[in-house]
Length: 397
Image (cartoon, rainbow, N blue to C red):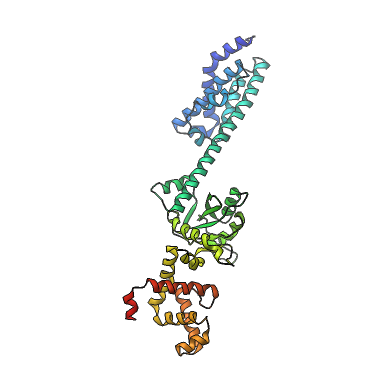
């Protein structure tokens, strides 16, 4: 039995190869995940185990030199090993190595056994530090990538790499997507926003642009469930999701863009939401959140071409295609201050006829002319549609 430290070190160096061989055999016998690994990764894990034994010998020679631990042990394996071996599996690997060494030196003195225990503690802390740094780096990378994706969506400058970037973020949304724009709170809790979204079976991409907080919302894939009445549960609307996320925003207006079919097309919803957010203060009693399409008149007055096109395509043209009589009745009703009697006198019809035609207008385009807010939307659509209509078409009428 070696008596001095120098003799013990010489003995340890002689048996280091034997310890490595026994360790690899023990890994195969006790760790199923190690056996199931591809040969390349199994070899990398073996390198880590051998490096651990060599580093123990170096540490035993000079216990004060601790910076070597992470670099010496984990530097022997490729970086991708951290992605394929979990921290729990790494600690299992350390346990096997320590057990093998302890068994071999059991009769070589308490000083050597105490050194092994102290070393195992140090390398366990070093392992946790390596994984923590990797997780932090991954988190910073994900945050930068998420910011890049949100910026691409807001600018509308999507390129061929956008789908791969979205996939790298682990996006769980599917189907329709909508963009929600509001103010950034003094203390932004990103984790709380994500937890709320997950609770609502939704996924979000979060972007902070100065005082603006932007959320790209998609419904996450959920299993079909039945409600208490035996029917299938319907997914929440984007407006309902926005109401639940509202507390994560700062004071001020909150605007939800219209749904679009896929995340790659989210820039259209973003443009509408940003345009609505810019003019939301002009509606004194705007709800929070408010849909961008409810701000179409204000957006059109501010020069938003998307709002003008939406008013013409969703209101003016469908109404004209359905019936010129309904268009004329709506013009008269709005010009007469939404008075049924005054409209009836101008058109030489009964007020009930006017009421019936207005009901038809609502059926065709979905907006009710008798409401104060919706009448503003409809009147804006009539004005813009009349301006955009070719002059020869007007003369034919």
